[in-house]
Image 1 (cartoon, rainbow, N blue to C red):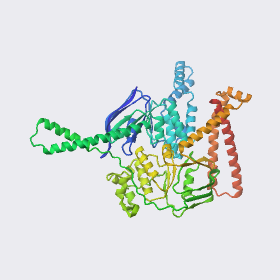
Image 2: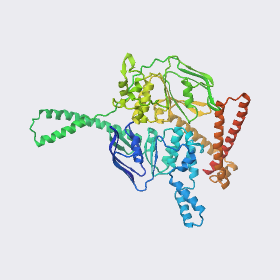
Image 3: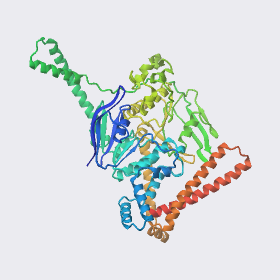
Image 4: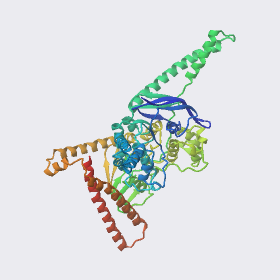
Length: 622
């Protein structure tokens, strides 16, 4: 069943043409990943399909009654609402069904309206809406339903927008970088959700494992032409390579034919026959084919890297806490030359804290960090480039000098350097604020690397970069001779780049795992399976049997208790967070610190007690 058809659409901004005369269709059950280079209009195309923007030419034809949801890169949410109010203020049709049912209950005399509302609740599975939205918010680490949007981080806003999009149960879900700001656990949960439920998807994402495991079709916009591949990411790579090789062969044949026809054209007399005119027309077509050239330049930078000594970085019993929250607990490690380490862990477990301590931007509570005299850090942060109003791309690089030193005493101009980072001469004079998200990240990466670091720290470098640039960046990093420390939720990137992992478990625990991310997941899954098998083989007591027989059932009072517990836990966690912050901001004396510490422990004990009961009731619902 065809959901929508895109018919010959084009989009430009001034003289800059993003795409021209694009046509394709989306059918029920398709899970399409859209692939293109940064700056070629991926986000613009999604907005046009979602009805938020209009094409300059062409049309998007929707199936009548089609229900769509759009997840943008930067959601626009009302800052005055809470998380829960945002869910209930959305244009979710299920909310209208619930509203009609509640209205019918208040007017019992109208039996026809009541039966109609009751049937609609059944048909749309609206009875468990509250449970469903709380489960999704819990998975996306949005536990405090009373938190105002104005207090949320950009990542939390993106996750809330994702929850809203999923809850509408649309016929077609359009997503722009859905895995940005999700940790690895959330990404894997989302993959499983899309595998289980019958979503139709059209999305842009740089996450290649996500494309591999979720999509059944890849659509690529390359050099202004659309190519469709009926398969996952691996299939796309294989067929794309074959297509490029075939194009190169055809171009080579056209060049040989062009030489032959060019010689004929030069020998032709001025008076020409009808036959020769036809051959002349063919000559111009052959010339166009022979002149076809792929714009596949690669990021190049010959680092003038300072030689690293035997002492790199040593961490001796480093500890760091914020209030009662421990980030590092007597952490010890000595980095060796050429080491390549990946950092993984849930949000809030101390990854960024560790990087800031390592680079001297944050002091540890105890312990010490010794940095070798020859070490020169290059720190690529999540914050990205600091945009100055009216600044052009070329101006950003010229701040480091008109000429940049390379290996063996050679130099390169600022303009030449930008060309190596895929900014053509015209693009170099664009204003920085007009660049796409991925182009800004590429420019920022350029500013980090031209400082010639020998210890490179990358905090989420893959966000917003297109797949082509990611492949180029990976090739560059594989040849990088210095130390490399990477925080990333891009599993494909981590597998390719790092040799071992620092796994941040929380509460100051950091595990050094000898392998890449896929090795780690296989190890974790095998541990879970072993524990499950051990649990299943253990003899069951009468108490266990009784608990199993009651599983999946909550009494009315238990359901009320379950709902109440969620609100109480969220409120207590907010109290704990407020009190923890006061430890850092209030100038308390020793007696007051002792008093507040006792209070903090009481709150923590209550949270643990209520959380344990919440898990007991949750288990009965499964």
